[in-house]
Amino acid sequence: MLIPKKVKHRKWMKGRSLGRMVETRGTSLAFGSFGLKAESAAWLNSKQIEAGRRCLTNFLKRQGKVFIRVFPDKPITKQAPEKTLGGGKGAVDHYVFPVKPGRIIFEVDGVSREVAREALRITGFKMPMRTRIIERDEK
Image 1 (tube, helix red, strand yellow):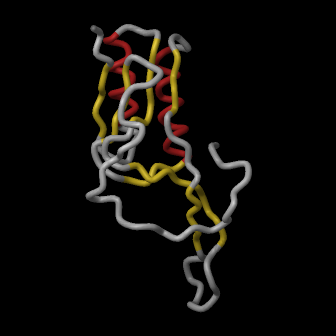
Image 2 (cartoon, helix red, strand yellow):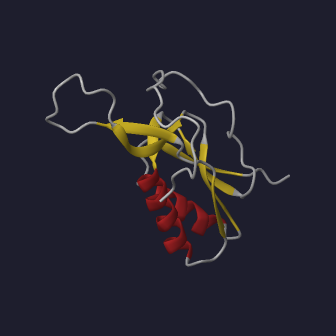
């Protein structure tokens, strides 16, 4: 799974709500011809990214190239479910990537338009947010 090798701070604060914010970085295609773009905000964990990657590579039958544009580096802590208050912050359970609307999650290159759109459509069902398929403008 995708986890950071080394972190500066082991436990982070939760952060602000992502509901109304929009992404300013990673909003245009950089590597591939087709991409999956987030339309709403969510926390994308490493298991969901891996599920999307496996779905893409399985559908493409190892043709073309898949680019993952996100990396989960925000640690999420968890306490035992029946633990009483006062024990401090829990241990790190998993890592997430906070996705804001407009962020490109996956890119695909080297396959036909129909194949890429179908692969990204199926991958969009694995994501915890609404997504849209975008393609590069050929001029």
